[in-house]
Every structure is written in C-alpha cells, then in structure tokens.
Amino acid sequence: MSRSIEAGAFAANLPADIVVERPKNPAHGDYASNVALRLAKEAGMPPRAVAESIAGALRPVDGVLAVDVAGPGFLNITLASGSLGLLAKTIVGQGREFGRSAVLTGQRINLEFVSANPTGPLHLGGTRWAAVGDSLARVLEASGAAVTREYYFNDHGAQIDRFARSLLATAMGEPIPEDGYLGGYISEIAGRIVASQPGVLELPPEEAQEVFRGVGVDLMFAEIKVSLHNFNVDFDVYRHENSLHESGAVERAVKRLRELGHIFEADGATWLRTTDFGDDKDRVIIKSDGQAAYMAGDLAYYLDKRERGFDRIVMMLGADHHGYVGRLMAMCACFGDTPGVHLQILIGQMVNLVKDGQPVRMSKRAGTVVVLEDLVEAVGVDAARYALARSSADSAFDVDLDLLARASNDNPVYYVQYAHARTCNVAKNAAEFGIGLDVFWPELLTHPTESVLLTSLGEFPRIVAQSAELREPHRVARYLEELAGTYHRWYDVCRVTPKGEEEITDVNRTRLWLNDATRVVLANGLNLLGVSAPERM
Image (tube, rainbow, N blue to C red; front, side, top):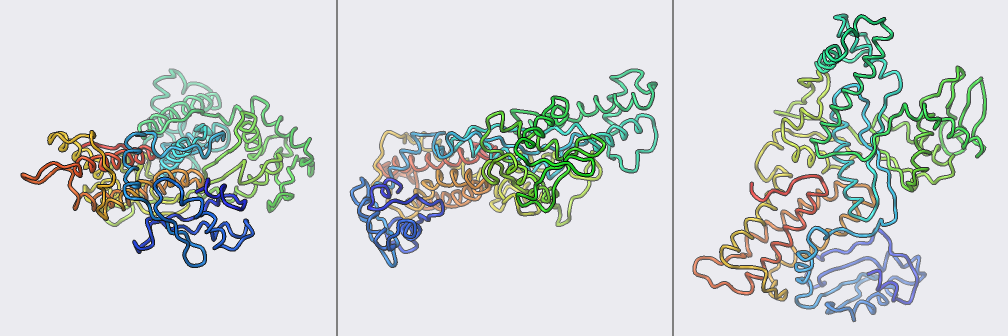
C-alpha cells in the first residue's frame, strides 16, 4: 500500500490508523480500505481522486485481479485466484521470522518495569507488570527495536528502614513496629540472617539494624529474581537507586538542569521549575537540610538512561503513581527532551483474584497480599502470564482462578494452546497418511473458511507492529483467540486427511500447508506473550 501511495500523483505519509479489512459482502472484493479518505486532507485532493490514484498503482501488481473505487473513496480489492493462498507457503517458509518487522529498527528502548521494592514477595500488581512488561519487550524486539529490560532496585529510603526494623524486631522476639511489614516471609528471612550472621543480635541496635538491612534486602531481592525467572521474566540491567546517590549522578543531573536554567533556590532548598512545562507546582530536589528529595533520584536516573544512549525511555508504573506522570513529563522537558517521545509512561491498574465467585485476599506466605507464587501455584505460569497480558494494562479486571484452571474452550489460554496442539496433531496424522509438503496448489484453497483463515493469518504482522507502536501487547492475545476460533471452524469443515477410503488429493496436500501456517502463527504469537505452545494437550 505504501509503495502504491508513493507511486500516486500526490505526496502524503501513510497514516497509522488506516483500516484494511475483509468486507462482509463478498461482492465487495477480498479486502476493503479507507486509506484514501484518511489521506485526502494531507494530499489536498478529493478522496475519490486519491482512491483512483492508489487504485491505478495497485491494479498492475501481481496477484491483484481488480481494484474498484466505491462511495466517497473506499477501495475494494479483489485478488487473483490462488494469490491469497500463497500466503500459507510464505508463512511456513519464514517460520519463526513471520510476524517480525523493521518498523522500529534504529530505536534503542529502555523498558523499566516491575521495580518493586525488595521489602517482600512480588505482589499481584507487580506480577501483572512482569507479564505485560516482558510481553511488551518481546513485541518491541519483534518490531526491530533494541530493548533493554531494566529493574530499578529501590534500596534507599524509608521503606527499606521499615523493612530492616521489622526483621530485627522479629529476630529479637519483639513486636513488629506499627509501620512495619508483616507476614511469614519476615520470620523466614530474619531466621536466615541470624543463622548466617552469628552474633548479630549481640551488636548495638543501630549496627544490628544495618546488618539486617543489607543482608535482608539481598535475600529478599534474590527471592524476587528467582520468582521472576520462574515466571519466564529476566532483566538485562538491575539498577540500584543507592548507586545514583553514591556515584554523584544526582549532583550531575542538578548541574545539567542548572546550566539549562531550570533550577532556582528558595527557602533554603533547591527547586526545579517544572511549572514551566505543565506541572501543577515546582518541585524540591535538594531539601533545606541538604538531603536529596525523592525526585532527585528520578532526575539522575532519567539522565543516566539518556547518557547510556537510549532514545526511548518507557516506564511502567502502578495506578498509585498516576500523580507522578505530570512531574516526570515536566522533568523530561526540562532536560530538553520531548514528553511522550523520549519519555513514555504506562499506567497499570490493579488486578484481583477471584475463586468461587469471591475475592482472594490472603497469601499463605505474605499474609496481607496475594503474591506471584500464589497465582502460579493456583493456575501455572502459562495461564497466569496469558491472563495478565490479555487485557489492556490501564483497565482493572478480575482473574477467575476457577476459569483458568479449567480445560475448556471458555478458558482463553487453553483455547489458544489447544488450537496449536490441534495443528500439531493434524500434521502428525497427515504424516501417517503419507501426506507431506511436497505439493502446493494455492488455487485449490477455495472454501470460504480457507480464505477467512488466510486473511486472519495475514493480519499477524500488522497486529505485532501495532502492538509495539501502541505499547499494547494485549492485542496479540486477543488476535490469537480470534485466530484460534477461525482455525477451529476451518478444521470442522475442511479435512487434511481423507475419510475412510477416500483418495488423497492435492487438496489434502495443499491444506496441510494452511494447517502448518496456522501452527507457525499460533506458536509465534504465544512466544511473544512468553507462553508455551504445547504439541499435545
């Protein structure tokens, strides 16, 4: 389509929101598009004139039988016999590469997600970000971007102090402080510290607390890493917040902003004038006592990422951080960057677990919250990842544990994985009949369900690219569910293996290509979500 636009008698950029779809009425061709209506304003031409120009460029293309202009400027495209079927061979030939593109080639993206404080096991909100973030990273990489997965390790501040005090109090047999952390994991870690640090309880309280802080944080974070790894999520970089303060990164960021003219002094403190860029108030970065404010770390971290060569910084934050968006975007602008381009912030809403129609609120280990291990123990890694990644991150929803544990078509992950397993079983049965990929006549794929299935398969690269550009990996999951349904309907009416004494024909052999093409796309899509593609179920 883009080449046809370039060949037309006008200049315009191909918009991202054009629609190319399968018409409901077969008389309108194989594909219909509104592209001419979307381009008309920029081209400075009537929509029908734009449509005629594009149609003239498309008609000579191999595989195109006819291109008609309808209504105010819609394009109706009819393909030559067998041209759509060629897609099956293309997909099988490309294998794991099908769906990948170069739309984001050249972009270096730093994707920061999870970044939960090492004060307890990974709670359900962090687990959702793990599933969504890793899926997004895979989609971005499939679209050509160079992605670095980064975890911001908060080992600096009041929450870590509370964690250390909770561990020490537990080890001493004393009540946990009112603002401390509860749960069985506190007793577990406190016991491990006492066992590994003989004499720690005989130290002065302040020294003992520092031991519990350092060792406790290391032990807790090691557990978080293992939990994430077992959830098929690994990070390229673990960045310690404390290192930003110890390395002089904060001072370097303040100096840069001062040179840019955005720093001022007032009431004995150092401020960043973020109101110049839409923030509701200016922000203190160095307090009057000389201590760095929380935002100072954000400044240093952002500059650190930019200095490491990233031209896109994507941060995934929980709903409780929604109020930070304005100040972070203003910070981005203070450095001379473009908010929404150099810095992108995704906000994720909470997710709740439901069992027997009732919310699941308590964890066996953490006590007050449900954690990653609870979800995986209940439904497994595949179902957990798929369930958390299949909905838009900015929407709250309930995860029904009973549904996800069910081996039925109303369980979305089972439905998609079963479709993949079915394609494998069809191929296995075909091999037993002596049917292989030695014959391919695409013009034999004439059943209505075959053209629908081929059209659906052809959508996969667009879905992946769109998911990457919009930062919405849930689009891949929803596409896979639609594809699975389309495949099941094709399977019900079109056989690869013959019945009874029926003769094996070239139709059977060609349909095997379509079956295997579906297997490739289902496997590639599930891989983008970090979910396995089983061959048997």
